[in-house]
Image 1 (cartoon, rainbow, N blue to C red):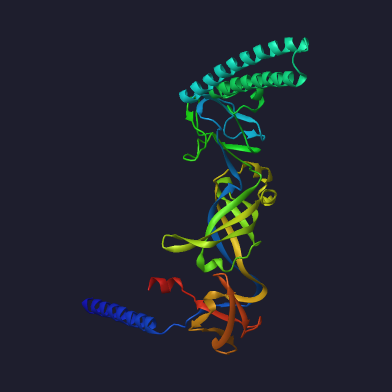
Image 2 (cartoon, helix red, strand yellow):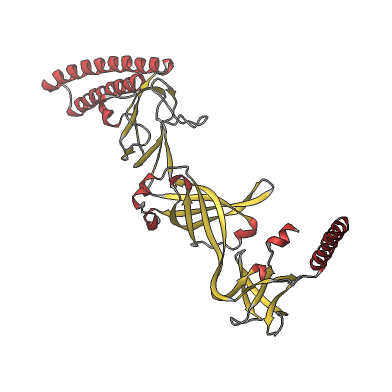
Length: 381
């Protein structure tokens, strides 16, 4: 029994040794490298760039008061639509004491002059009735009375304007009523009832009562890198995507390219503007009615096609071998036992980062070698 046991153990050891040797020998043998293959396709290549910017109205107007005072009443709220000339707020005038005193003095002086003119007229009128003074002298006295009457009325109007900001004669055009200068949507009213406001003058821009804009005339404003700005042309189409509106897209047309660069994070950027076509909302999204929900300041991305080549022969860019300024591909050649690839020089064109145009060197019938196929066994090694 002991003899047989030793033989069995020896056989097991020999089998393990032989199996290990065979396994290591197989692992040491070189494996055939396998490559992916592509057939050139006729396709369109587009080179695009994405510009980050925002949506804003083309014309945004700040409505300012014509006089200084205190906000007495606000008649509109942000988001409401106003017509040109419609009242937004009312200002209560706080008169300047110097101006008020001068206006009151003018009224008193005008009153005295009117009384004197009236007295002179009554005297001349009685003498004229008795034909003791000429018509010419009487007309002069009557003219002086008219002037004195007009002067008093003007002085009283001036006093009312200084004191109240409005007079009886110009109540319809009162400067205390702050009116919108354009028709549009009120974007912001930065003041509250009781806030002091001042009119625009040489030393101050004045207080903004409201900001109004025409939201039916919007533009996209963004910046493009100097390496790409040279490929832009006025009138180029853009596709605007607004993430805040669930990826709604609009068409736009480039209408402005800044002639001067601004530095941003060490790179030169050029400002661009594009007119947004509100009636071009992406119909596939089923949200055509959402165009009216666009708001000033929405972040947006604009996609511009910088170059394109239609109906050209293309291959994946991973199949191209770059050697200096020369490009090559490996084309499959007929072989009985294994695949052979012949290196061919090609002339390439436009690339979109995935596929590349091949102008010459291969045909649509060729089979082009791609990257090496990595198997799960190769990964484990």
